[in-house]
Length: 348
Picture 1 (spheres, rainbow, N blue to C red):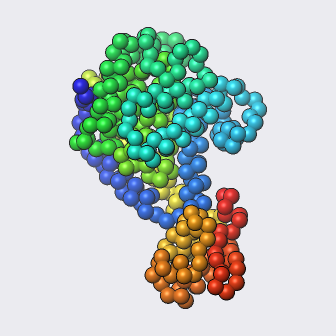
Picture 2: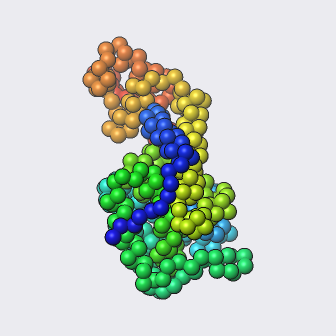
Picture 3: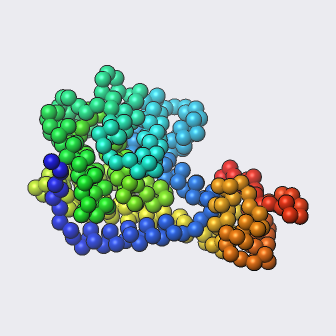
């Protein structure tokens, strides 16, 4: 049996999807130097790890999270807080590997995500296993039970239906499937702990596997954390509206728009200001050749001519400009001349 979501396609949903498609095209096709793409991708991973764990009460600052990513010593923090953040970094690495292999979302993947998320945090036989007892969601300030998830006996069947939905449903737009998976996972609450973090990571995996990795430059978790009350309210709206996911999906998609517009703004700023030695007046060939050199180590004039189908004079002009801009260096003499990345760009 497959999970059947209940929702209505509204103008807000259609408008958000259209904006996401346009932003995806812009971000995916805009040329920036690989060193900057690497920095932006790392920054997105930092934000995901920081804000997803912070939603659950983690007390590390953004600066401390950055230190965790570099395996630096953290002072004034609990071992649990550090472990939660490190685990989330590992989960993000895991879903990247899964997406690159084009693996389907299955029980094994979900259970592994949970195992990584709570490794070293939960004791007992709870890591990477669906719950076998009832759990509850309480208001942390009052202790009042605000949500009673389905009984444990129904968890596997419900997760099986969700997995089937993600792998067999072809008519629902992938962006909607990602939002639906987020909500349904939270509704089932299949684990005793770590459900929110796994739900958010699973959402990213569903996007990655369905053509919306968007160069992995975005982090939806910041949008959720900046207004947690609205995040939880959007989730709770489904129960209040007889199981309709419409309001939640509007919120989810508009969050994607918000985050992708931020990414677009960062890319435009990089291109316009020429930050960190990235000139704004490079042509597409010059930007592409930097990526080529980073992958292959060097390039020669004849390689440049063959790749870009240009004359010897054009190749020399293009490459010399990159040297003049302190992006490339020249090694060798005569016919043995090759162009390599300048050392300082390799470490950005």
